[in-house]
Length: 266
Image (cartoon, rainbow, N blue to C red):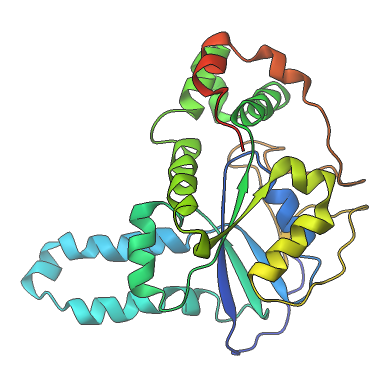
């Protein structure tokens, strides 16, 4: 469902990044932050994919025939500014896997501003339990082509998957604390105001008085989030109140995953 657009402006805006483990409160965080009329936390963004596609042009025959690297760099320098040019917000928080070491290397060359990452983390067994709940409540999901729970979790945890990439990002950012603020999922749902104040302080923004009851599902720049590609309910939140809820699906995690990942806690 497309909602009325805000008027567009070409004012300079801050752009920051949301780098978060899956099932760690990304959508909840976005829904709350987007109450602030000056801030837009995006849905999963294609901006990094645009950067990658431009970078890969360097391997093409056309580029090799005329390797004008500076001209291509000029385009890459402006990707984020141009993509969000019509977004009428003072602050954009772009959500995507920007914070892996390889991606950050490219971003540091082209972004031209200090990179600030908001990193949402959650104990890994709780992440797996959240996935198990989603498997059972969303039978049309792509993951259900795999028959057993072990097969499904193996796909989620494979080395090229989102969880592995975010673990790599977290490990890197822990060594570069000036680039990141870490928010634990449990802390966010227990004391959301305290955690949001950390974010505002990190971004050097005045705090906005958010509400933590009667929430809305995420709407970004006037457009409702569409979950139909990956299956329904992947990015829906409890709207009545921000609160911690024990996940009974944790007891279903196979023993080998507990042994392998139970020590990864935040």
